Image: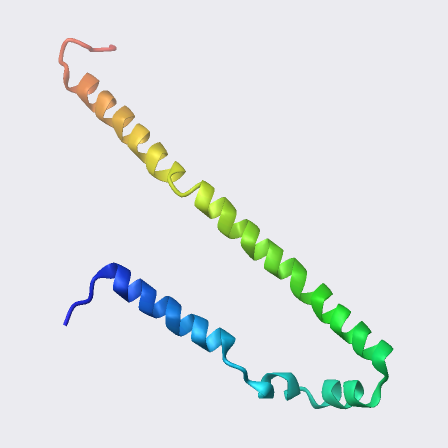
Length: 104
């Protein structure tokens, strides 16, 4: 059973979106120390904890977005360079096959 490519990509994207958006309260309670510290602190400490989480997650997120952007912009550069290189090799091969072009 073969699916068409757009349907397959849409299905994978939909499953990924469902997994990311599914509310799983267990994620927030995985670290016992963080949980007890946040539960016993006041509103100021909770705000500081939220700010700390944002500070820790923002740089890797922006670096990942930047990497994807650079890869997207440079995606055809290697193919274009390879084609030009192939043309140069073919021209060099054509020149070397000519017996009248003896450099000696």
